[in-house]
Image (cartoon, rainbow, N blue to C red; front, side):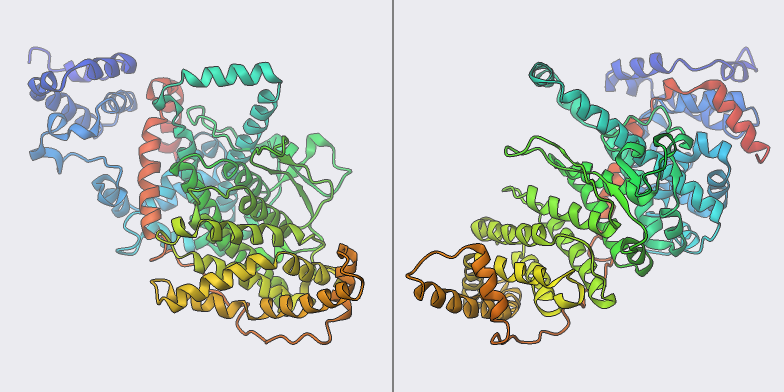
Length: 604
């Protein structure tokens, strides 16, 4: 009251963020309630400064505001003033601040930042992160202006700006992971040291919030792939690793991947220092790292987001054309989960191949290496669906990949066998017949249309050999489906479809088993070698009778609503909460903030 210029002078002082944080944390809630009037008044003064024109005062005001938790709205503002001032909530659809951003459309402003190299270097990461969150605001209840704007966006410069940010995030995280693998493979002493060190890490410290922060950019990647047809050219655009843009220092590295050493074009004459890759290549390598070990629900959510994004890509004709282009080959390393029977964690491909082969390798590795009691059934459904969609495209366009299909058949059979072994546990939680049906449909695509996309007749023989060799698995599936159909259980409809899908597979088993038994009987009951079985298969195709199954290449196209609505709602809440935890305002460069404000004000 004595100094009318007190608040003007007060907000010229730089906030001591660490001191404010520790002071508020040390105060008991009862003491905070006693100071409610003073806190309300300070908060109001901070808000009033934001209406002014002094960038210095506004910056200091924002830093002071950042230290107040929004969970104590009554202490901070008072419930009578909360609607007037502001609210901050993890649930984006209930956040009135976001409502204001929806009314005040900032999409064009965001695109200007992404299109401007200087602004993108400092603000691009956060801009894309915020855009990903805003695009999910009440998108199931009403039209979202940011989604509408994104779907119609044809600004090539802005789209390439998005691609540059995404590529840099993915490639730098891949590089971090590659370095961590090199460090942990230093011998027994380093492994023992790491094990002992992990015993003293607190539960809170073990939570990788940066994983969920980068999940925000993966969410933005999904949205732009799902909504914008023009972004496909950006996904295929090559990026020079030497020109990558800096990731903000406060975004702690996720264990995900410098693509220069992980993904290289098939042109061997390109010097290592000038190697380039694109967003798709870095994304595939990142997915292999993300899905290596799914220890908790957060990691599973990130994996699911990646698989959904891949599902959108394999349903897009332009993406599929690029995946299967015989003139575009890359060598992509697929990281594998560590298991007892193998030590190496990366599949170093020596022969460049189309990206479709890398996607198939990625899905095969996931199916084969995550057969655990707490089975991520939703991820398996997506993985099998991705394989089916790629095969359907190859069948329609008669594309013969130079690819070894044997690992896929083996992985699918072992997956079905695992479901059979754990029927009692899984059948009460989910419809396992729906996923089995999807896997059997893949086998039926090979049986019925394999001559249109398999690289040579030998692969066809190998397919029949594998079905005959693992006949017990298919016989057990048939028995289980019949049992559930006759019992008229809750999965009666799905089990009936599985029984029908087994018709040709059981015909193959029955037909060739008779031929093999006859051959064995005429040769003194000797056991047959694999070559002898293959010879019997090749010589007895003519007498095999199969039923033509229709609509094998027809599938339900991806729809976010209603199948994945709850997933994305929870995902955005997780991202919003994580972003708050990963931005240490005390470390922000005060001078840099002022320069950025000035450049925005001048329309740079």
